[in-house]
Length: 230
Image 1 (cartoon, helix red, strand yellow):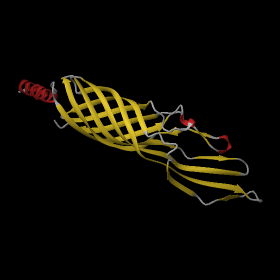
Image 2 (tube, helix red, strand yellow):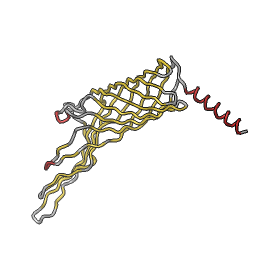
Image 3 (spheres, rainbow, N blue to C red):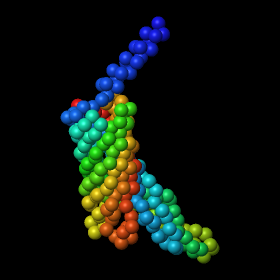
Image 4 (cartoon, rainbow, N blue to C red):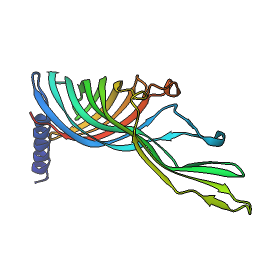
């Protein structure tokens, strides 16, 4: 009985493995959805009173699909189109001296892109694949949002606060860098046509035109789940 169970288990594993294999000439669509974490590198903000604030990763939605063609059972090329909500965010911060100060909160930059990744993939026998390529993008919308409140000291030394100000405006055209070019690398795992993928994307273009961002780039992590439709 034990021998039969072992043989049956091996047969099932071999069947699943054969079903998961790709062959030369296979063509498929892979819809994907997931989360991206993005920030700007080297974009420290110098605020009032000489205070510097560094950016941190902002979460966003990514969704799209790949069209993939297998040149060989272990090698494929793909092209895709994705919506990505990218940008950067900053921790709450305040600049102040003895007489006055200003605090900022919920400060973030949002940039919505349509992205076209072109990838080459190497597929291993265990369902893993590694990917490398280039990615082109075009910005379709952008904005900067934050909340700000100032204070000053009165004659008695007590703080007097101004009304809080909320801003949620578009980035002016003179600042926008609408074209995107970057290098994506990825690691994926496929099982019964379900694909889990982790991708890192680094832009070679700058996020904005201003000289403040001349050393800055997009840095983005993507985590997606997809399903292969042959």
